Image 1: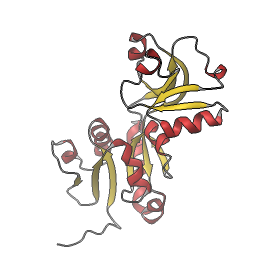
Image 2 (image 1 turned 60 degrees about the vertical axis):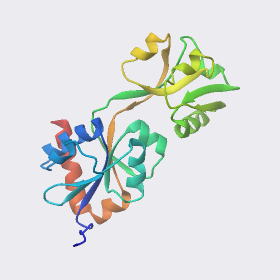
Image 3 (image 1 turned 180 degrees about the horizontal axis):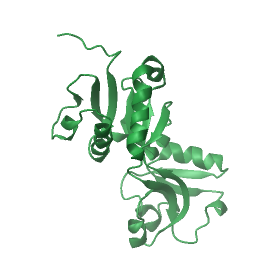
Length: 216
């Protein structure tokens, strides 16, 4: 079997599902054949017909890892996941889909700044939460949860939650409110720092095309 020339192949790390589907739509507008991405398959690695692009499918939280470590040159990941990972990569484009906000939520009227001793925060973004509250000079007990995070304040496990919010419907239906918005989140295009140098002739025009496709 002839080994592929990976110096010329651009490797994408994608999370299967909506992120991959929306990414494929953008890449198709850039002239990349992504038809096989949209077909049902259990394969973890796919290539386009030209062999110029390879797609590896991983868990959303693993996309920054594959890109940072250089296994993939390019990845598509939610801003929230990127913040949590702390990966040392270049964030080169906002792809404008998967829009939501990272926010603090709890019962209306709760003052985060007043709870300087023993603020309890339920979240799946433990790494980001620790650095965020430290930067604000707040002593926070970070409680890791990975499902139904809204239950934290309701059952008394936490004072507040730190989570992504889209419509806010789930919060309202459970008597909670957004207390503070931290930042806007959406899908982001990330690139390995070494790859941007070694494959600049391919990656720089590609990133430009992607930005143009997003703004169309």
